[in-house]
Amino acid sequence: MEETLKGGSNELAYGLYDLQVLRAFLVTLCSVKWLIFRLVSCEVAGVDLVAELIGVTLGPKGRNVVLGNKYGPPKIVNDGETVLKEIQLDDPLENVGVKLVREAGAKTNNLAGDGCTTSIVLARGLIAEGVKVTAMGANVVQVSRGIEKTAKALVSELKLMSREVEDHELEDVAAVSAGNDYAIGNMISEALRQVGRKGVVTIEKGNYTKTNLEVVEGMQFDRGYLSPYFVTDRRKRIVELHDCKLLLVDKKISNPKELVKILDNAVKEKYPVLIIAESIEQDALAPVIRNKLRGVLKVAAIKAPSFGERKSHCLDDIAILTGGTVIRDDMGLTLENAHKDLLGSASKVVITKDSALIVTDGSTRTAVSKRVTQIQNLVENTEEKFQKKILNERIARLSGGIAIIQVGAQTQVELKDKQLRIEDALNAARAATEEGVVVGGGCCLLRLSSKVDAIKEMLDNDDQKIGADIFKRALSYPAKQIAKNAGVNGNIVVEKILSVDNMKYGYNAARDRYEDLMAAKIMDPTKVVRCCLEHAAAVAKTFLISDAVVIDIPEPVSSRQIRRPPPMPTSGPRLSGLSGLGARATGLSGLGARATTL
Image (cartoon, rainbow, N blue to C red; front, top):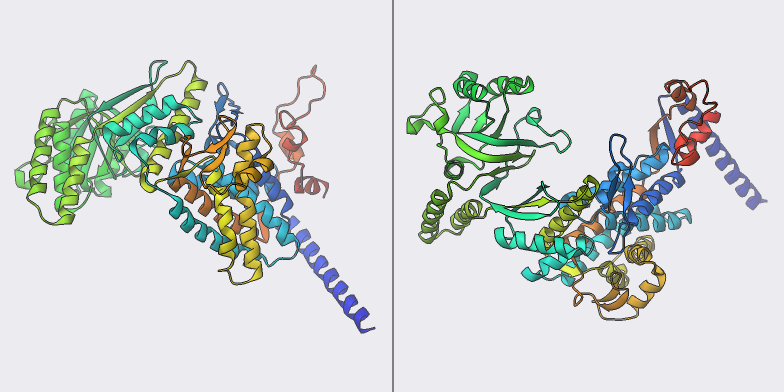
């Protein structure tokens, strides 16, 4: 009798809880947004859709994705990050899943420059495995902590597996990232050889069908534009000026009248101006921005690099490079009396929100060489380590040069795809120089799964150990995806790799055989793999511990149809919103269908 009452009270409690949830749901129907609790299936569907779409690009046998373009030819790309930016679903709940998993790919790409696809495939594995166990009653908070702790421990294990990359291996790292394109790998390796591992390499569209490498004089430093109104390319969010003059000022500019003479001359002679000063106060900057927006003047402004005495030295270096003169009070030069002959010259200037790149025509090469010799003498006569480091950085900036890869192709579609591959290859090579390399082909992540059992012993409770087991299973997802894209059963590939103790042994999808991947020159940058582990774990943790979703109420189909142009009288009835994606595109899947019924 007591058990019956106990069971009845539980049923009553669940019934009251369901009524409360239903009441809350009905109340939200009258509000501006919907509040949905414990409805993860649609979000998981969004994650799966993204991973399936982007996963086809992974590995040497990865396929292309065609992106439709409303205003031009379609894009054919093999780059996960580019595909990721284009994904937008009608179902608002599925779109939440898309946006969550997009974070993993975007953060990895921002920090390491590559690995977007692997991050998303790994995040999908963590989320899929995590949802399974939490649905069976595991403590989701403890499971998430287990995932987080396992990720940190795996990063430590990864660093032990890593080694420094040799110069001749940079070609292989770049080629693997570019889809086993060794022509691209060789060009990236040659560019870094000429300008140094930390040298500046830029990628731009060429005028010919062949891709070329050119090394020019120039300098890059960490200073972005002072105002977004200076931006000339809104899509890239950059300032780009050609045949530009440089005004170098070693003081604060506070009065707009100080700039009148030099800018008036720029307007008359129609040349762009880059102002580099200690700082520019808002009162002086405002009229410059106004004239730029009106189209009267091509201009941009940035702060001088570094501070104090180092700032003055940097300005002097820029003056030597560009053939200009620094305007400073102790030299008897004032802005009011400045003229064109004091300005430096650059064939091209590119400024982002964080950095500035100055490219010159090489006419000042002799002066630059003398300057480098002077600084080298200072290095020899300086005993302080920090001061030597600063002087060596100045030498590197002045003498390093800038490598420009001019991408050529037969068509615009091919050009875009090639440019993205070269960007990925360059980013992978740079990441490899920073933190070293590990075995590639998804093998490194798979080998890390063998370390999880030891990591479990350090966790606090059984639920955290469940989180570690989730990670162990998810680590096989990238290798399975690479095998799948090569037309091979992923489960069989994973089983065969793990049956051999050699950490370098894995599946070479390009040659369809098992071998020592390091000997086969298949390597991944350690930094990329580390970012994949960290960001996939962070996104999975966020996903699993999220218990409710707040979304905008989807617009009813009827109101969307009102905005469409009326059909032609002779065309008969039309199906709106069904092209390409079928019924899914109408926004009626999942919660959307329920909403229109209500």
